Length: 303
Image 1 (cartoon, helix red, strand yellow):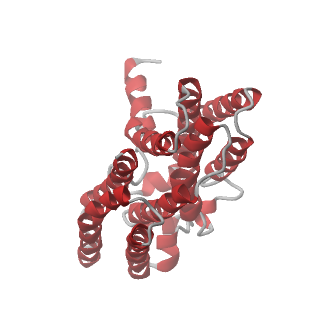
Image 2 (cartoon, helix red, strand yellow):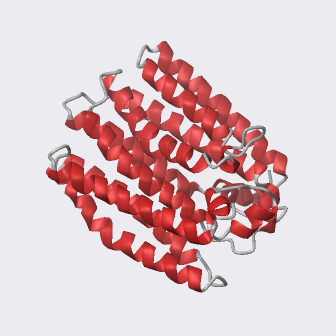
Image 3 (cartoon, helix red, strand yellow):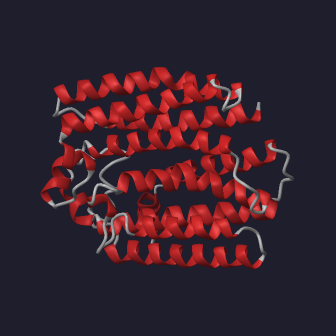
């Protein structure tokens, strides 16, 4: 592989996106440690490799199966419209497909090792569902993203199954505490709002190729209200859980992210009034909101 193609493959991979998987996996492991469980470095590293392999599999598969839509994207941002590498012809589409298959094989191999070490059958169930949903998020014949189910499925995989994997690999399959599920539910809603935000710049291209995302199905105005409702519900759950004592008071650090959530709402209203403007700052804000919320929860757990 030439130097130019190596750089193109790095751009195709978009390593920045992997940080989200690391953050959420650490969040689950931290919940186990705070609960009094000993730290197991080997299982921690195996689990992180497993999460990263699945994450890359999904990413490369999306690049391959969404190629035609990405070629038609005219309002690409750093977080929507794909990497643009395949659309520009810098790499052959088959490269992305082969990379996805390699990552799939890697994930299954690591999972076999984890099960052979008698760690947690729950991890096998979580990862198995994540692999199936992740592959068929954009791959035929299912294409969850065109059924109106992709956004919810992806959010549950990322914001629920990843932290639970981190927790289970540290505990060896102990019962999952309700407090961890309560933290993950609002995070899943914020993640889903982020995915909906990513769909606005690609709405026309998606519609022209029959990719019926939620934004295409609902239309821009109703999709905007869905985006707002998801954020309102997410922080509403945080408020209810914290002040009812269902979550520790340290988690109330997440309320520091509310101003950014409010900015997202008003920014999207502005975007709809200026449809020809770039969505770069709006999509960046969506990523920032999810990352900030997860970071604040992690700090709250540790404190």
